[in-house]
Image (tube, rainbow, N blue to C red):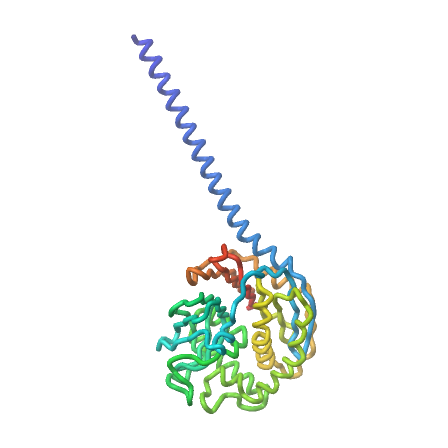
Length: 361
């Protein structure tokens, strides 16, 4: 009897030990698998972005005065879909941007049957004060009213201006100039910093052009400053010299620019057609920034392609932070002390990227 009890006890211990070892092994395998999957996902997420700039072909430089541009060539990834830009949609009355009495949020409604693409930095004129949009946004067809984040770029007004309608916004002809304003809105998310940098930009333009560029109608309006006669005259010199560089180049999808020999920013698009629609507005903003950046006795400085590639690659290296802007739009941000990178993805298209914005701090 004692022998039987001993045998049963021994067998029980062996079974318990075997089960324990199996559970431990399974747990270890699960942990290893989860760790591997997590590593793969992180690696894939990092790799998918890191390899992009390496695949770009870069041409240039194309220079006028203190503004240097390099064109980015690559594959057109959006051939079965087209966007209307905000500028086009407002001009064609296919969209309404509503004043909401909230400084940092407007409402937008797509009346058309096409997607409307709003780019961060787009200025809308009118309302109770001019605004800029702080993030890329896709407004779907027949959208109804949707909230959209914004920043004021006209601190001194909160009422109707002249004959403009203040219940909505009439146009979007310009984009904000200077990376400092963009960083204040997109990086710091600070209205005060946006106002401060708008004022600083106006002061720099006035100094470099030898005349006050602030409008007598609204001194704080960045939009009216960009439309100042002297600013437009000087900007046109840059535009006339550089606007044609994209012609007869079938694979241009973006550009990088430098001011006074220092790399500033880059914009790259999955759609060549979208880039070409935005090119005049982008170039104008870069030209305004170049004018604001004129330095007395500045010697011409060259920018090498290797510097451009290094800037793009370095911007893509930090770990990614993802945020859903809407059910349609996802924003991926990568940031370190050297710069900040934004990638706009279309969740309706399996997270396909639409726009990449690189800004050097």
